[in-house]
Length: 536
Image (tube, rainbow, N blue to C red; front, side, top):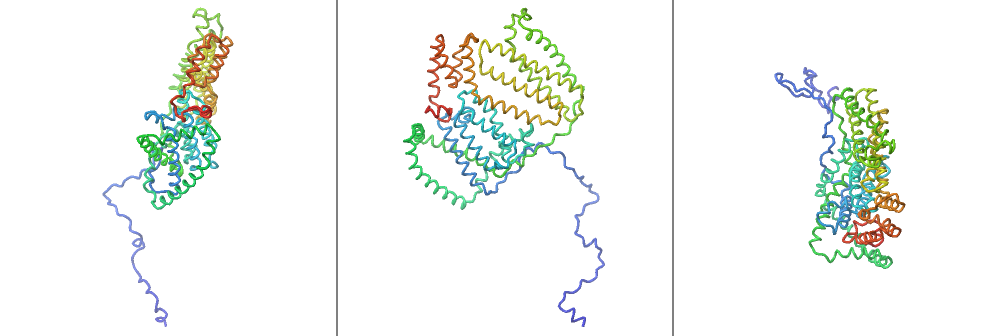
């Protein structure tokens, strides 16, 4: 009976005297004589954490849209720099006008679409993107080469930070001093690290996309053939731009070769950047924690602060006794006018040095326990810095009231306001150590520069000098300098020619020279007002 019941079943395993340890997976054997390698605990992250991860050459679902958008951006860039000398083309972002505005705004719009999306952005990212847009508009509002160059020095770092944030970078990392360096490294590496993905696009999918794009292009050409002649006949400015665009057809093949090279190079760089945005590769950028170090002692910081405070205490007493005391106290120094109208540039430099000393002293003891006497010395130095700024502002005002305003003097005023604001923020951070000083300082400086560059500084400087000369407060006016401020000063010079017979001839000569200011320039270097008025 039992045999029939057991038929068809697998035989039961025989009893074994093998221990349970023998049934366990065999562990790798180690020679007893060989010393074991100690396990190393993961240490603090190093500078390598600032670099993005390894290159990803696998094709992604957004590669083809990125390629199409990159080609459009490359064509726009080529159209903007076309006509410029080959050596000046790389410097077009620093010198261009409407073309710079159009190129940067288009790239910013594409970055917002491919990146995290406008609804998923943080407040700091939105604010920084708005600042980039405003600074991108500035080159089309002013014709001054100096102002365009200075604006590019602010716009460039701002765009780099915005690119990191839109590509997935964390705000707490990007909006810090070390994060700025990480954003710069990420931006330059992103221009080339994804270029290899162009070779990994599938031919079948690329072919279908090219056919679809070709059909769409053909349909668009048919519609434009009906619409463009009507628009050209309705608007003379549009007709002139259309005629300028068709001048390309009659040019030599050499220029077409250079255009093809520019499209290929700029298109490849743009594709790599757009892929970094679409894949949110900025999230790979990690901030490295600061290495362990020993904070500076309170005595090593106290000594230089005390020395500076003593020197500036003497200087402050002199300012209140002589500069703020009036003309009677400066008779022995060449008179009040000669005493007060000098030294403002040096004082602004001293104020900047004082601010840097306080910042360095705080950085050296950022992890140490707060020492009350160190904070008092820092506050005294900041207070002396405010007195130095007041002295510099008074001296500059007296000088400008007699000799007029210039771009350098206006920038000096701007530097005074910037230093005063930073002094207030640093002073608040001494009492509130957890205050985000870097973010607030960055926001303050960017807002200050936006207000300055968008207010039309060249036109305001010319108007200030003309108003002062016509009212009698400015004794001598430099009409040649007004003409060098670019066509932004045209209206002020015209008013000077009408209301001042003594300066009429010279002012007319400057106006005639400004009429030919744009001769030989391309449309992309013009201002928006000049382009809309039909200037070339």
